[in-house]
Image (tube, rainbow, N blue to C red; front, side, top):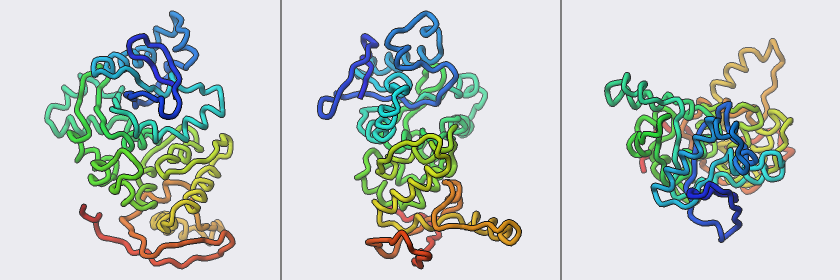
Length: 319
């Protein structure tokens, strides 16, 4: 794991138990991001980029908060190495979980826009309208860290997760109990959410590449698998197969009431076939709060049909 020294701005690499305490940055990418190579040997062109200034500001913020190290995805991963990129994506949930604090930079939330919003409710609505809440990769960055602090474009502190908890829950569709009890996969609150529920959270989001809709969920389901860019929608099928192998949660098959109804209307005309696995995360968009009623020890891959009881609850269970 590479980290940036917040004093010298130099990169250092650490392994295993030697990884020091660190802060971490969550943000959405723009056209002027800085690569690892550019950060290590910055030219005048590099230092003029918005991405360079963004990382410098994050380093300054971490230094002010007494964090000697910070991790920033754009600067700390060698994306020209497919092996390193795969390792980083498979480790990312853990890296965000282990960070002392996660700084969330909302580039599209400005001082002017907040001033125009006026009331407290309008400010929170402007906050949650940020692009950050629509991207696939930032979902794990919302769930995994134990501490999140939000900043606007001018790096003015907006507040913490607790300050915006109700609005974030409304915007993301994630119940408060999962947002307030997060940070590690062994947290009971996070594990209380079934597979279909977690998929429904992802269904609201987008990624630039089709495959990333699956890859951004690896840590979310405690899954490790190789990245195969170019496989398209097959990536999501592979992910579901890995989830079935690892988790005894048959709500993974309880996808898309709305999708099935829409597909059924056109099946006679298009000969559309619906398989056991969902075609995309969007098929879970209308998922209700299911709870599994039995435990499956093994699912045969050759099975044509599996009949499973799955009861829908009218509301989320209280914790």
